[in-house]
Image 1: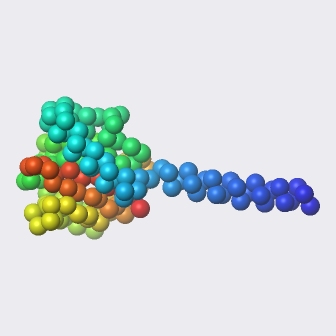
Image 2: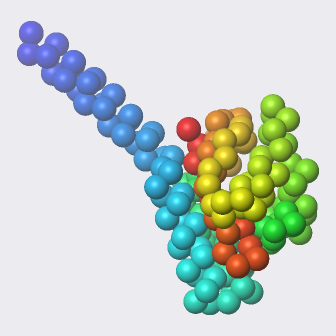
Length: 152
């Protein structure tokens, strides 16, 4: 009887721990917002050249689990992307998610009207490679748009 009780206790504890670890693999909306604000402060303190180099560094301080910073000009041209350096220099307005949603256009429209906000879309997770629901926080600072998303 004791061994059965130990087994179920161990199984329950293992399930609880694995759920906690899985949740910790994903960033939260609060962490995404905080990372954007940290990136804006870093740019102001260190200048654009140093900041963009750090934002583009996949091992840098602006990549945390599945969270990463991306930065565009107001015209949609990418200056930094912590998960995909091939996007730097590209016009991101043409990007569409798997449902053909022009989410960068939505970000730029939100910047023009409110200066910050959230957009939902589907995007490949850089850690799992699976297409997942994503919600991205964006904020304007000067002539730049800073963004960071969370996978749900």
